[in-house]
Amino acid sequence: MAMWNRFKRMVRSNVNRLKADPDPLVRGVGGSLSKLDENLVTLKAHLRVLETQVERLRRREVELDALVQASEAHGATTKAITHQTELFEVRRQLASKEADLTQTQSALERAMAVKAAYREVTDDAKTTPVSQPGAEPAATASPPPAAPRAATPEEVEAWEAEASPPADPSIQIRVQPRGSKKTIGEGDSGPVSALNLEESREIASKTLGEQASLPAAQPASGESLLDELEKLGKLRESGALTDEEFARAKRRLLGG
Image 1 (spheres, rainbow, N blue to C red):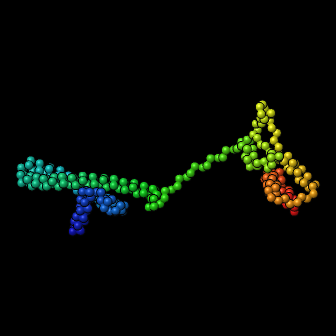
Image 2: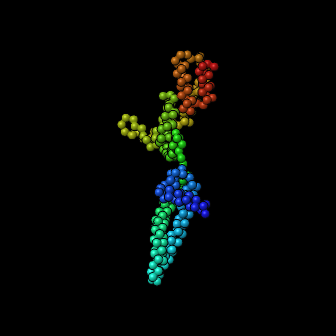
Image 3: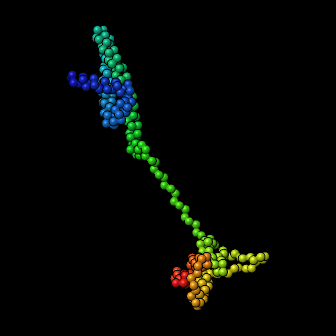
């Protein structure tokens, strides 16, 4: 019996604390879900005890009320007074237990709401990545580069003309956009037929052939030698001379 009374005192102490402020279910236990569940179990157990006590007191109230009426009907005044006194005490206890039951039910509802909110917060914390202090934000994916636009034939011809300038004023390769016309003075002279690469090679081969038929010249010197070497270099860059032809012409120019 003493153990049962000690257990009731312990339960009553915990329940009174939780009824006064159920928020410590989260704040006081440091967010421990197991402790939260223990407190909920305590509340539910006390609620069942209170419901049993209230039900027993209500039955006793009905019985005493009937005894009081029966005693008064039979003229048993002493018994009626005794039953009336006990009835008052039962009604007093019943009112206290009903108030305690209402408070416990309210505390249990709030505690369950706190548990639901706690679960929601912990679930969000598990699914939301926590950024470390000083960590750089995740780089956003840059959009893919746009596909390059296809060059028109006119642009290709213009680029080839810029990359391969004429090597010699006497041998010029004119590259013009298709459909363009060359105007000399006033009027239209019609489409210009540009010299192609094969014609340039033919001119260069004729020049080299004429040089081969002549006697070997003495090595040039000074600015004339530099000019000739520059011309040969431009012919090779423009494609009029191959590397082998350029080397042979260079040796001939240097008297090698």
